[in-house]
Length: 576
Image 1: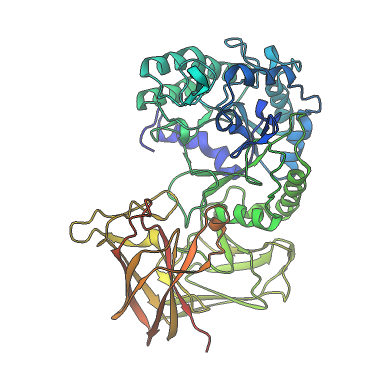
Image 2 (image 1 turned 45 degrees about the vertical axis):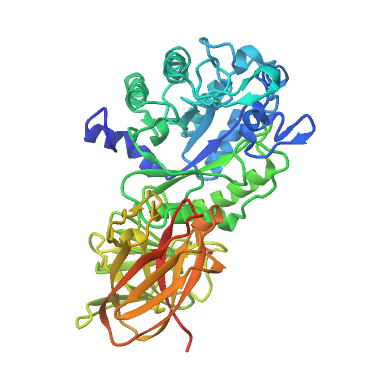
């Protein structure tokens, strides 16, 4: 991170519980649960918690929701119990979202659930008590910059003369006053009224300056030295990084990161959103993120009565049943030591252990290349008493390490089966880009060497592992990989969009093509942000050894403002 208010050791100690947790519950709950996506009989497009802004609801009208908000079915122990059954280790709840309404007792501002609603209870206090009993860390979401209600809040919607609407840019002086009079006092209340707090989850820094971000971070650490501050406090000064909403990175990421994600298409409750993700997809995302060293913060949006919707409960309990058996492969683990993703699943590591998390069961015989560590014992987490036979070999001529497992014919789990490799020493793998046993060669963008080309601005690799800011032709990505099995290969490029012209070189073979979508990618990251497979042609690889590959942008579609976003180049063996 760009800045740190304490020593590296203090920061590491502060993050220890969070790194161990890996899986948490997000809760978006507020006045917006009452309209639930509908205002005056009209469905308002967009996220449930953004209805005030998207529906252009005047402040006096939106304030009336507080008089109706009475979540009599709210039960803190039920919510916390669900998180515990799901295998979640922390809960982050919206203490104040962008609508400016505080879901806690806030002596500094009467616009809060205790003072302004018939409920007259403090759900944060009840959640703090329930979390303490259950051994769950309670964390608070607080919108530190956007506030559509308080004077000086950024992004504020105002009703103008004649009924028109505007979204004015807040004046720095007014915003500074808001921070001092609303944000800092309420953050202080959150950190002094409820005992130990795991983290403050800030969001959308928009108008905030770096000095203001630092001041908020330092305020949190001064009041509770062990409390974490997430990256969305602004200007990269948090204790860890926050990826975009529902963002799934291409490969392992450096540092500490978290992905907030939805169970359907919204965060706050929206009665007509029934696009619930299947359990299979949710588990794949949990496994995928853990294999990249990323925490998974999975959201629920309770109703105005205080009830978590049944589809959310069913899915979380199903994940919990899997975690009860396989949680060892998630909690406290680090990212996969291998340099690319596998078609059959993902890998996590911890101490002298590797976990192979199979989303596709390979059948009785399975091979993986590149593991140099000596394996002592192999077991299925679902059947730990029985060992799995294995063999390790090393081809000195090709410097190829092979681990072969004799697996059961059928998987141990409906969704993800986990095999545990107990090693004789520390994890040691060949980090070269290797052709896999099935012949597939994967060249991730984040492992490429970037060349700017003649006068072209070079693209960068974003936090999600894809190329960003690739808007000028001439730049290129270069890879070196090890190829062992000759044959004919289909060359695929995985991108966010098509219609760009590129050149690919594999050894001395050259392919030029305008990108045209051949199919949608089925990668976990494509569940929320579509990724497409572009077919560029075929190449013939002979012999074995190291080869070079490159991707150059020849002409970029000017209509695509995001430019060429590449996740990986793939050489797929054609069936003989």
